[in-house]
Length: 101
Image (cartoon, rainbow, N blue to C red; front, top):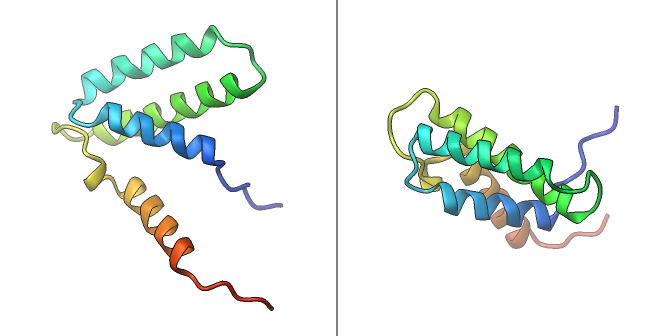
């Protein structure tokens, strides 16, 4: 079984855009945004860049909505373990020295 491919820079950009949009939203508002993203995704061609963006957007709204489902607060990327993990991985990749084997 081959490993999952690394997310593209475009996927990361969509995720970051969704996180910024979700900041301060409660579960109810995030769910409404997820519904809007799903509806918008139905209007794009099933292939190509728009389809990839739409799919990444829906997946990120789903993740955020799931994260907010069990707490009454507002979404904050600074306290989102998934976002913090992505940032740490990015920092690690940038800081890691290039080594040849």
